[in-house]
Amino acid sequence: MARTQVGIIGAGPAGLLLSYLLHAEGIDAVVLEARSREYVEKRVRAGVCEHPTVELLREIGVGTRLDAEGLPHHGFSLRFDGRDHRIALSELTGRTITVYGQQEIVKDLIAAHEAKGYPVEFEVSDVELAELDTERPRVTYRDADGAPRELDCDVIAGCDGFHGVSRPTIPGGQVKSFDREYPFAWLGVLAQTPPSDEELIYTHHERGFALHSMRSPEITRLYLQVPHDEKIENWPDDRIWSELSARLATESEFSLREGPILDKGVTPMRSFVAEPMQYGRLFLAGDAAHIVPPTGAKGMNLAVADVRVLSRALVDLLLHNRSERAVSYSDTCLRRVWRAEHFSWYMTSMLHVDPASDEFQRRLQLSQLRYTASSRAAATSLAENYVGLPFE
Ligand code: APR
Ligand code: PHB
Image (tube, rainbow, N blue to C red):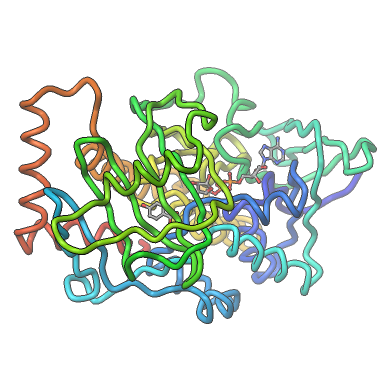
């Protein structure tokens, strides 16, 4: 049987960053990932890094490509009533966000593991967790060749996303979950065309929400609100472009730049929190513990914040035999998680068209948008949440 201090399930941003932070402190860890390296490096996800996320990646030495290729943003636009209302992030908060695809961070972290020889096993299957309520939890799995393996650990980190095995392994009644489903989803496209504007544009339109974002000076990322059970087959490329132009249209000269669509997919929207984020020697982090709708761009940033807290707790627990931070791990994380849950729900509710809403709700929504755009206090509140509150 193999042995490690921390068995990490999942090679998304949470699992990889946790592994890297632990190794840097001299703690041994092994990452086990169900998918192939190619798959996780190509999976198109969100792309907004909060200020604290960027600082952390830089601090630990994995920010070189992020600094070279990431696009710093000093503001974004709320577009409604056919006009732009700029939220001046850096003027209001002194901080910026950086647009850099999540899969680029995953690539950088995998390369950093490879360079240092830290173990990441891809294409594992049948992962099962056992003995979670003892000081010797165990992971059993099959390696890429199908051979059965066992990993004896001090701690297991469940970083395996919303559909992973870690959270469901916790015995019934030990975790409580809170959730909201939204009656819409996002259709996301990656297009080979320069962005139509330098900044992100969050658009509220009677036909539904639309978002203009980007990945590089040559690649645009765009999203459309669609019904929650929408099939991607209903959206040939020309329908996507015409719907985007209709929703993004302004009174002035905005024109949407079209180009070949490189990737498209529908993502459901939900809010979800599992409490506590821990059971015995199993700690949950990232999407395994909570989901936010993508409107506030918080998903990956929350995963980063969780593992920062977890790495400190595990340093105390495994190197100094002090358990205070491990015991308070869940409470510490949940404060930031619920702030992000509220913010993402608020941004989602303010910007989307709820098919069940009536005229009263639509007028409230427009009033909220107009207030946010015209009051420095309201804009500052939005901006400080958007750029990311400081780590505790
Ligand atoms: N065994 C091993 N690996 C698994 C298993 C399993 N049973 N189930 C899932 N995984 C892997 C997935 O293939 C994925 O690579 O766990 C990883 C989880 O990674 P993410 O889904 O990226 O989650 P996380 O690291 O928490 O990052 C959160 O990801 O989903 C986005 O919007 C979310 O941006 C946020 C970020
Ligand atoms: C993205 O570029 O993928 C993106 C940007 C902002 C969001 C969500 C996603 O709120």
